[in-house]
Image (cartoon, rainbow, N blue to C red; front, side, top):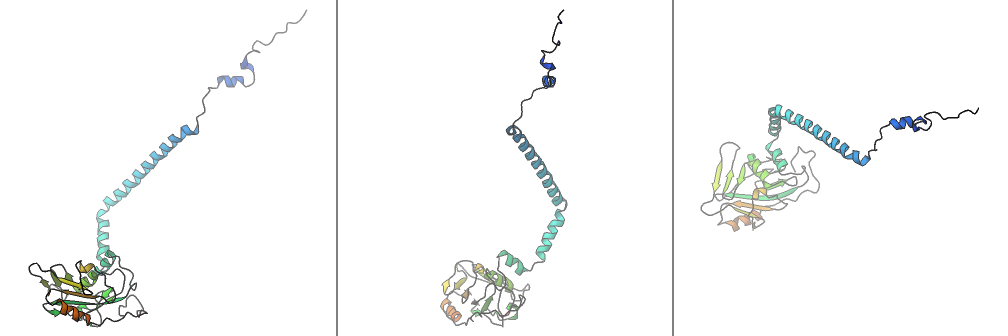
Length: 247
């Protein structure tokens, strides 16, 4: 009697083969490409960056508003600690002391008389530009970018289109000389009429500057101004420190 050779009941089922069961029960998922995930990552990073910036900004402004009075007070205090000359030096972006050296002559005529800058109250009143050695007309400039405004402020002189204001002793006593009618203050630089704001002018070596209200004697004043001697600038500086301003 022959034996019936029958295959196992589930031999023809793929599930019985090695590994098939797992595959048959694995939920198939399509792989996600990097291009699809990149925008999500960038958006997430951007959102985080915005949140961090908002937090930092909020903290900064909160600190400022909580300490506003103290901060503003410190700014004012720092400004008060600066001298008028230092404020002007920063305003005009003046160069370092010793970055330039020039001599010029200036004649200011009020009521027919020369203003005497040789008086003590006009001498060595500024580090960057000044009169010295009791000379009534010779200007010494010691840095680049120094306008006449720094000299005028230091000696209490103000020149406008219509008036010349002089504060002789840096006190409340002052004198103001103004033109009449349609006349204006006469300003000449090197013999030529100067129509701009003379306070903003930066003197150059050997300049000759005339400021007067007397428009009838201009030629006489210019001739007198030309007679002033302007000393040459030494080739080698004679100063040993920035505190010394005698040259």
